[in-house]
Length: 126
Image 1 (tube, rainbow, N blue to C red):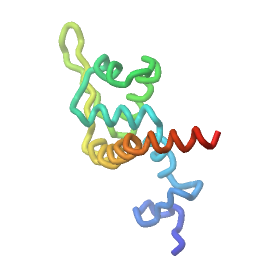
Image 2: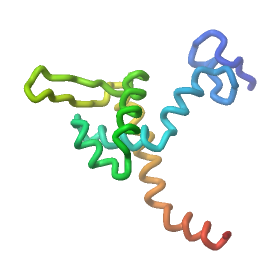
Image 3: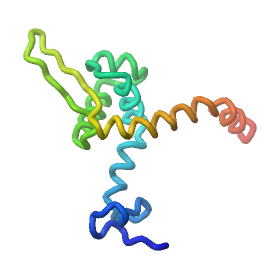
Image 4: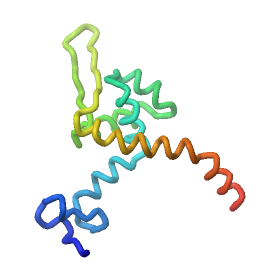
């Protein structure tokens, strides 16, 4: 079955393999390591910036800020600023973010389960 690459905007016409499909940029956002990890961390519940930075070991402040802004722009994450002194900002998954966290969690679980086998195979191939 051949699909028309995203011509009408209807779900059935989306073809992520087509160069002009708007699905591609969404897939690129979600397949980014830090995006996937941030969504996974936020699946545990709303968190402040510092909590996320500690949870996502190895992420730089610049990359975390960029990642959160991008996830917010794609409606996966909500940013809530509370009018307090000192200011408090929390990040939380939207309904859309929670829905994508399920398959991303499955992928994370699969990677953790198979990492030793894959690493062992890769080491023997080198």
